[in-house]
Image 1 (tube, rainbow, N blue to C red):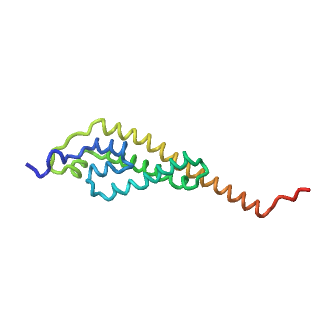
Image 2 (tube, rainbow, N blue to C red):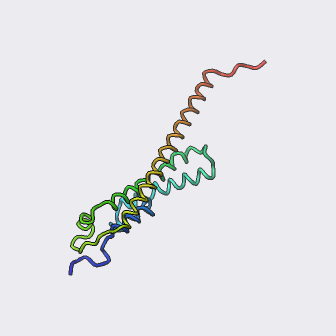
Image 3 (tube, one colour):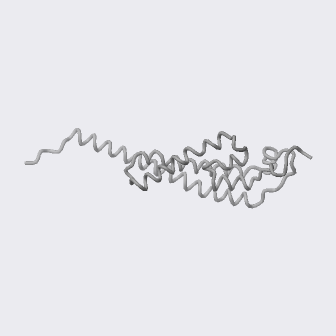
Length: 161
């Protein structure tokens, strides 16, 4: 009997779906590498900061500049999680076995991983494009406000009689 137990087998399908559903919190990393995985823990702060930005936007409105900085962190965390799901799901079964289940007999991953990849592509693309659009909009609004206030300072309104 090998030194790997049945419970140590890492499923490509489970990894793909964990990355899809809870990857922004690093659960796919904890599943594959355990709770001591630094990269898994590094997923959590930007996700929580992004959620804080979303909450600030809902509470304080669109003029809250801190939320402008925080919300894209959530989008990037979600996009990174979707990328992980895509990579896991598209990894060939043989390579997956070599890396995560050495010495154990291989199992085909089936359609579950492929469906996870398709959903990750859809969600990840939408999240990434939304994050870029939101960030660009806020940046250009700030530039317009800065230019308008600089123009007002250089050309004060004429005094009214």
